[in-house]
Length: 248
Length: 268
Image (cartoon, rainbow over all chains, first blue to last red; front, side, top):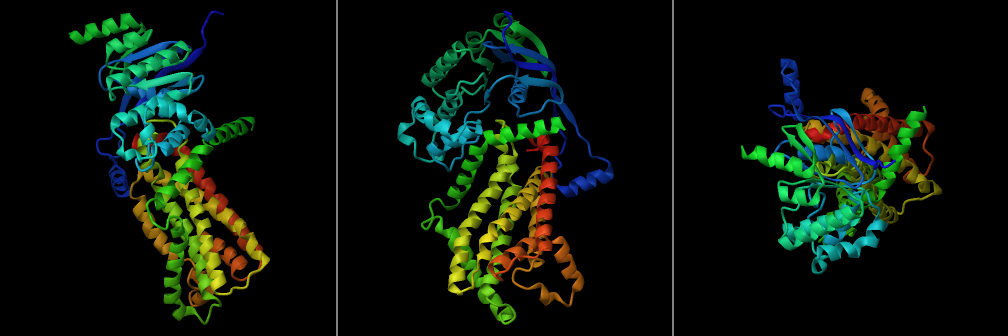
């Protein structure tokens, strides 16, 4: 039984978007189009028939050009999107970092937002109280804790978002190109924390356009192009093939 | 059968996990409403009181002789209708307004709608302070019946949750629902005996019949008035009608919401 536990099982997943030429969002147009028989649902498959099995403790990098469906796949794994075909099974808790500080309310203070955002991620208020100091320490916002978030810089917001999301030890951490903001020092701090989480057995799914970061953090990679899986396997092989293809 | 109860248990578990989020959202809605205002939460009491005073002055010249303690009569109807009106109007935009968040994390979507209705309920509780002031000022007779008022509020709350869920999901697909609903609630207000008594409409028996049979707000305001204004127990028919209307609305709301919730993300 040397087989490691299967954490994320993406089984032949297809994800569909509605790309209707004009978005019909009011009743009048709906009725007119219905009568004229023009009500169409122009579908667009963002991810086509992709399978991926991620085992405990592995770190996967998702690479591919812009708009190739990487983020869509991550959203489906986080449960935000439902797959059109196929199934996704996740065993364990997921911390999605699709965008840092999604759900922050600009009118509320940092203190209130920490609790609100923690609860959005599914924690209890009690749990957030216990980890409050830890979050503030990591984000380094001691002096601003009671000012409204609208006065924060985007870097400060990102710091706060990252420290809330990674304060727990999730089984699966999903990171989608969020570290682009923030200074070098903070990026290093984030990298260190992710390294630390990986060492503790967290499974990582990581999207980045920086091949070097992917190579450094991940041990496996999957290359997606226009919704199709091109290649998956050991990180260096996939990354090299991808870089090769990009040069052409 | 086992499968359905399993599914129900799953939903309950999920709701329990996010109960603190619901609490924080309600607190947030209330806090933000009065942040930076000098009198703060006191406005929740003052606001309905001022509106009531204006309405009482306007309408008392018209109906005073027919209705005993008109101020209290008016206020009972006004409070409940305002709760329904405000909370459902807030609920309409609850899903579309949280779009940015729903696109980026998984949260059970009904939490946002529920939080809006519940904030309205908290506001209503503040307004009961104003109700007490009116009762003291008009030296109203009070009996133990008035203590039963939470039973009416529960029915009304369930009704509003159902209506809110239905409107919130419809508004994701058709943005003009909120404008249509504006017109609907205005008509609804005039068709609910808030500042008049149904007896005044004796010249239009069909209208009275329709209000009695198809206007759920009539059931709740009627029950509430029986308890607080007339000091008596409401009749069994109006209680049964109120409970049924609440449950039917809840089933409609939950069913339509569940059916379309996975499609929200494609439209917001």
